View 1 (tube, rainbow, N blue to C red):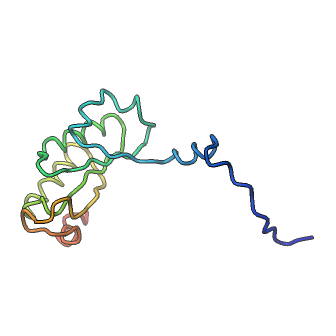
View 2: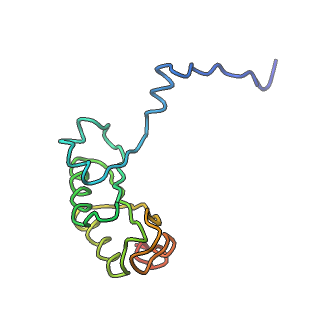
View 3: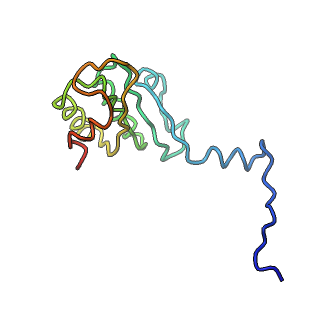
Amino acid sequence: MALLNFRRKDAPAAGSPETVEAFLKGYSIEVMPRTAEKVEDFREILPAGTRVYIAHIEGTPIEDMVATAKRLHAEGFPVMPHFPARIIKDKATLADWIARYKGEADVKQALLLGGGISTPHGDFDNSMQLIETGLFDG
């Protein structure tokens, strides 16, 4: 009698329904406010509980970002807005964004990143500097 069975299990075929279903479970998506406006109701196209990242592209007003987060939260989705360091002017602006996301859209998590531009518009050059402000500590 063998104590361990090292026989390789047969994997499902690459395009099998089981493989596709396993791949699609637990995914997240990313939207921008301007594209979110084109979707009447995300509940009609996404499974409940799908995490939705909201990309903050340079030039997008914070009001549009918060409104998108608020809407998605109201539709029952966990939202995670981007905080692109290089477009955030200073610590006061960062504090305002955090307060607005928490207060208006009940945001509980954020994705901190450097951002898509190469030259900072303010005090921050990278995501670590955002963390070092202490504003995300609680």
